[in-house]
Length: 584
Ligand code: ASP
Image (tube, rainbow, N blue to C red; front, side, top):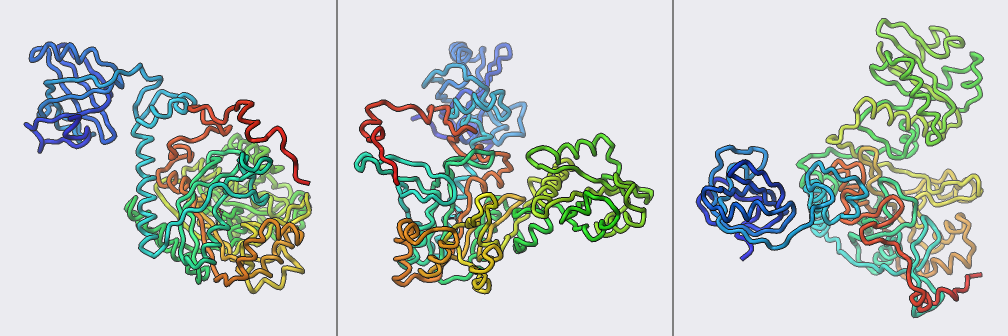
């Protein structure tokens, strides 16, 4: 028998028991005549003690063990004289009477501790060792619980989990596809799904009514901290529902997850229109843990011969509480921050509302004390606050103010990882214009329904059409999004044509969907959540990588298995890749 117990469960109630434990040598402490070894498994750590006086042979054997060796130990549970209240097994130790080495280990390339000395690259190369660390394992335990609780909640509401295919056709909308060559049909290619979008809609046509799937999706995009080429969605679709029912159902799921996984009661989610999110936060995923809303200042700044403001269609500000005493140097740093290419602003104007009530700005030449007082009033500023003002083209400047707002929140430690502020952003525009290409793209995807009351604008002012589309945002992270779908062939055709599809291309790409709509498609809609983002948010992680067992690095590599990798010529020939003919 390898074990009677795990390494995480023995305590004072077990004193006197004869037990067997198996696990890894975590730490060895040699203290003249006594050797203590911590044995570790997934469940915890238990101290073993070996006494030279009591059993010399065993003591000598124990002293020959190394870190990460796999051992089995038989012994008796004894109360410890010096207890460790930091771990559940800290009141006891095992007086070993037999030790078996199950496998040796080389010295690991980094220490298997909560605070490891291993750098990112090394930990990725030896990910299986990294996963021995509690810090990483507990994220995967949380992930497991999240999927279990999601399944429970959705099953309870009659959702059916249905698998959809992973080898599908390429649709050149949205992100770039990962492509898989077909050996049996040479010169033809599958694509890996960016999401099961069309399949879940077809399941609604089939009458499945409520579908979900915890499913891998693939997007060939440049990677960032919160992106991986393959990621997992909690993908859902419902029939005979309006937007409100969908929002309520999945707000319920999120509340259920917070309650069961973190013991937190989340209040009802505020719902904010996209237009308001942009106006007050400069972002469609506002972080509402802190205030600092954008304030419009254009009317207050006009006509004082300050060209920067006069020539700009938009002037906006944020009021930063308690920062009037920021030094010249700190303000210069902020100016440099907004001038970085990632933010792209030309400059930054400040107004200090000093503790003594005086006002001092970087544009005193142009604006009187009276003017500046009005600025402060508009911003609801108190003595001691700092007002930061930017000007330029409306959307761009709002976005820049949003970047500045987030930066100030970081500097002021306002992003509390244990505070969770959830909301829905609703009424997204249906389309987004690419000015360079002079054409519209679907803001969500081409299957999203325009709001009925905006339908008439499709021909005259497509950019103004709002959609029944929504995102769930938590602490400034878009954790999920979805929409009410089009279920009418004519309307789908129409939207595709606004998106620049010719009749032929629309038919070729999405004919099967539009055909399906002619066979009694019910009204339907849905949503998908990014599981990786959700877990990393719950776990307070900075990167989604830390909640994925075997993630890819920033250049899309799995350095442990060395993928992607070159393949043999024979393999290429077999796939007919050397002979591929391009589509006209
Ligand atoms: N398929 C969409 C996405 O992946 C989500 C949805 O509309 O349900 O973003």
